[in-house]
Length: 293
Ligand SMILES: Cc1ncc(C[n+]2csc(CCOP(=O)(O)OP(=O)(O)O)c2C)c(N)n1
Image 1: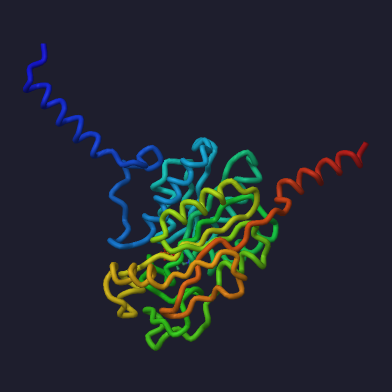
Image 2: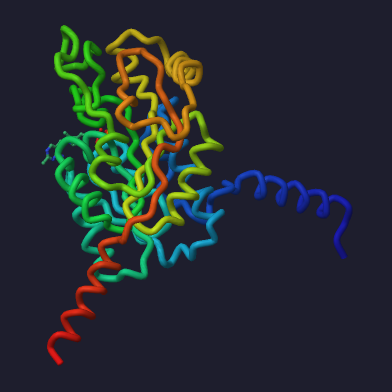
C-alpha cells in the first residue's frame, strides 16, 4: 500500500518529468542537445516555427525528408527527428531534388542559410524555382557567413561591416524574395525570427503547396553581424528587427531590398499555382508512352 510520503514523491517525480519534456520532443533529436547555436541566435526560433507548422499540417513525419547544406543553419537537419540529410555546401537543393524525383510521395524540405542557398547554391535555387520542383525552402538569412567567422555574404547589406569588409560591404545584396518570385516560385514569404506566429502560419501554408515554396527568415546573429557592426547585444538586435519590420502582404517583390539598419518589409508576397516539375514530367511520360503505341 502506498504511503502519503511515497504518493507525494511520485507526484513530484511526475511533475519534474512533465516539466522536462520539450513540447516539440516528438520532432527533435533530444539526444543531440544541447545544440551549437549561440544565445539570441534566431535559428532555434525558425526550427520551432517549422516543427509547430509541421504538426499543424498533420503531414506524417515519416513522409518528410529534410535536407541542409553547411553552416550554422545547415545544422538544422541534424536536430530534427525526420529523415535528415546534412549535405555538402550549396548542394542542399540539388540533393533534395534527387529525393523528390526518386520518391515523389515525400514532402521535401530544405532548411539552410543565405550563404549556402544563395551564394554557392544560388544556381540550384534559381533552377529549382524555374522547374517548380515541389519542395519547401526555409532560408535563414542572418546577412553573413556565420559559421566560418562572419565573412561578407551576397545578402550583406551595402555598407554593413563584415570580417572581410572592414570598410563596409561594397556590393549591393540580393533580394531573396525577388529572386524566388522572378524565377518562378509559387509561394514566397519573409518574416523575422521574432514573428513566430506569422512565420509558423507561412510555413504551414507553404508545406501545403505543391511547387517551389520559399520562406525567408531574417535572423539575428549577435556574435558576428551584431558585434562587427556595433549593434549591441542579441536583445538589441532582436528589438531592432521587431521595431523595424513592416508587414506589407502582396508587396511587389522588387521592393523588398534590405539596406543597412533600414526597415525590413515582411509578409506573404506570392501565392500562386503553376504545374510542378513532377506533374509536367508525368504528363510527358504519358505522352511518350502514348506515342510509342
Ligand atoms: C565548398 C565549400 N566552400 C566553403 C566552405 C566554407 N563554408 C562553410 S559554411 C559557409 C557559409 C555559411 O553561411 P550561411 O549559409 O549563411 O550559414 P550560417 O552559418 O550563416 O547559418 C562557408 C563559406 C565549405 N564548407 N565548402
